[in-house]
Amino acid sequence: MFKSTLHITSGDTVGALLSKSGLLGDILVWHDVLYDGKRCAGWPDEATMLARSDFLFQVTGGGMSHEKLLKMIHEQYQHLAAANTYERVLLWFDACLFDQSMLVHLLTCLKHKNISNLELIEVSSFPGIVPFHGLGQLSTKQLLSCYEYRKPVSSEQLDFAERVDLAFAEHDVLAWQEFASMTSSAALPNVPAAMLRRLQEEPDAHSGLGRLESLALTAVKAGHHDPIEIYKAVSIADAPPQYWGDITL
Image (cartoon, rainbow, N blue to C red; front, side, top):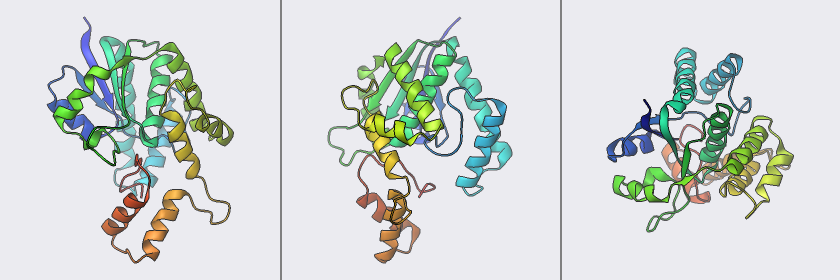
């Protein structure tokens, strides 16, 4: 017997909102910074999962042990592999780089598992919320209002996601530039802007810094030395949607 719905999203805040929304089904919150670090495209093998746990251990400053990170990664993919036991899979994602890199990876993984009962909700703006960074800014009622805009994921979108996921995994800057230049031709419409933001994080030829690093240094030079004040200054200076959080900064 099939279960009803598997909701997949990218943040604990949105996961908590979904749990309070009254929508039926299970919730899978994905945790990984898939726009960065070495990884494979599509479904990972054991060596890749171990490498990701090492990478996450480093970038989070050891906030979680290698063992807990590896367990988390295993459990995520195990839950994703069970997506074929649901009547449908509904993905909730923002337009930012963090979410788009995750979305294309998850679609690629689901394609590899021949899971096609997929629907997608992508939100790039919301009335009355400026600047809009993502679903985590919404109330439960506002989040529910997005439900009616869900759309089936097409085979074209799955093929496109696979190409983008490969480009992320292989750090293919030329492919990034190609995707960033797309407008109406992108099967997933928020990928081009997200890819452009990823290109901006590549080291500048003059300073050697990416955009986020440069904004942080500018904030420090302006006299912001407290971490919270630096965060606020960089958030104001950066363009929405903001893909990074406090740990990334």
